[in-house]
Length: 284
Image 1 (spheres, rainbow, N blue to C red):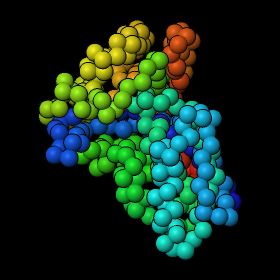
Image 2 (image 1 turned 90 degrees about the vertical axis):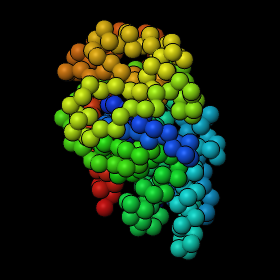
Image 3 (image 1 turned 60 degrees about the vertical axis):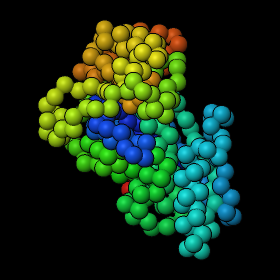
């Protein structure tokens, strides 16, 4: 195998409760991650040297801080310790909006870890790859394991959850929300009561970041107000994307057709297992 093309799926936070701030500056949270069947796509092509290159349809993303390159560098260090030539040309087809709270960068990193583990024949376990991913971001292990899950800690303590299949319309207004800015803001709610998963599943769902983001980014509040005319809506992650559940494709498509011109939107289906796992299995 000399090349591999794999998906990097999006996620929604069906709820997000922040239960405290840790001494290291991170936050403890409880959230329900819903994986989706749409996202970015990455192509990995082996090289005969140890060079790593990244190309992308969004040229602004081609830099050494990109999580794709950072993930590749982490794995390359392990490969070189094993005496394996580990070079690759990587192409990122960026389809998800940046700064939307959809996990695109973390998902790209996870796909890179899994894809290069396969292509370079490193044979690292999923657990090892998830630990490497946690060095890159709290959401990366979710995408490495590839299962819809309840998460605690900083988001890395995952319990797989099987949810009924739902259809979502995801809308992203023309703004960028900085996750770091939200989590360091003095007005962020940080004292939600930690609950059991059973209690959370039976409680009204909310996002503790949403009131603050609506205040700081009025366009997010406006988007929520627009979407709630079609179905109950809330924000995912730290925004700016918002979402609503629809009973069928026709009703979701009707709302999407009325989307304001400067907002982005797409319809996606919730999945309990990431399409990435199936794509990797097809390479066996």
